[in-house]
Length: 129
Image 1 (spheres, one colour):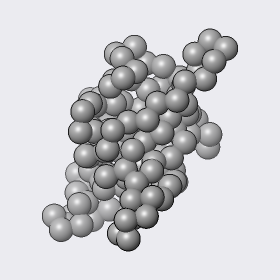
Image 2 (spheres, helix red, strand yellow):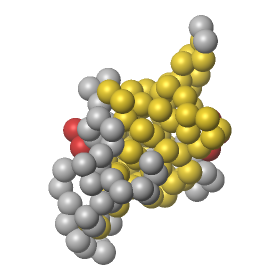
Image 3 (cartoon, rainbow, N blue to C red):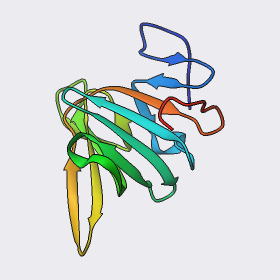
């Protein structure tokens, strides 16, 4: 993961949290937590299996009770205004999750992401435990 302190690029690194404009699948490890703020809600994704992008999702339209979810990708427009999938999470895009719901699968698409916070398991103190 590339992190630097710069107000122009949207990156900020502190000892326990990483505030970022994008988070790739390669950035996410087991027991990391991702705080996803959208225009309308706030979601929390606790990573269980980073290889399969599996974790527990709560907040927003999902509710307060964490549910097993798979992070698929995020969709947003690139600089040319063309709709593009991003392998991970990106501000300005909408995150797509699939949730298990008994015998059915639910699709959850967030509103546009306004900010992302990656809390690394090794550094976590208590932002979103």
